[in-house]
Amino acid sequence: MAAIHFLVFVALTVLSLSLLLPVAGANSEGDALYALRRSLSDPDKVLQSWDPNLVNPCTWFHVTCNQDNRVTRVDLGNSNLSGHLVPELGKLEHLQYLELYKNKIQGSIPVELGNLKSLISLDLYNNNISGRIPPSLGNLKSLVFLRLNDNQLNGPIPKSLASISTLKVVDVSNNNLCGPIPTTGSFEHIPLNNFENNPRLEGPELQGLASYDTNCS
Image 1 (cartoon, rainbow, N blue to C red):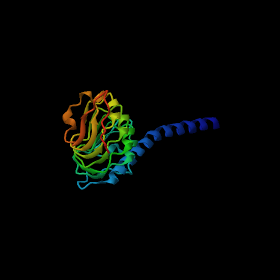
Image 2: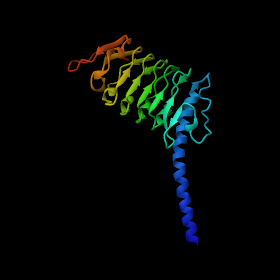
Image 3: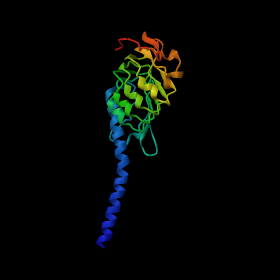
Image 4: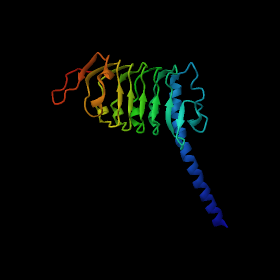
């Protein structure tokens, strides 16, 4: 009888752990998103449903999850948000779409966004984002859409982005970027007007010739 009770205890323990593991992952994602909420000013209360006391963030408005309750989309475009992005966003390892366009977000793009290996679309256009484009974004090997236009970004366009074979759309127009425009890899077919209105950009990179001495910083 004791052996049966022990086996039942073991079975219940294993079942409990199997149920808790996805919740733990979802909770860590909820913590990451709540860190974003705390960093943003939200006058229209679009983030009002983002309650950190819920089991996971999958019931929050503007958040989409997969069948395993892992966050795959954050849709906050044109939401009158201001503030800054947070490094905790890099913990959303199943995130495919990060849509934060047409807000008033300031500060820099966190290097940690380069950890989002499932990301397909990064839309940060029409904000007030400054600083450099992190070379770590070159780690996003599933990325298809990268739209950073109409911000205040400076520095060079990272060459690491050209190594993303899936990348189809890049728009960095209307910033203050400098240096040459990459022309290899995924950048071969990006139209030049997606780089316009960056007064310090030096034009397409000339392969096989001496590199530009741009003093780009």
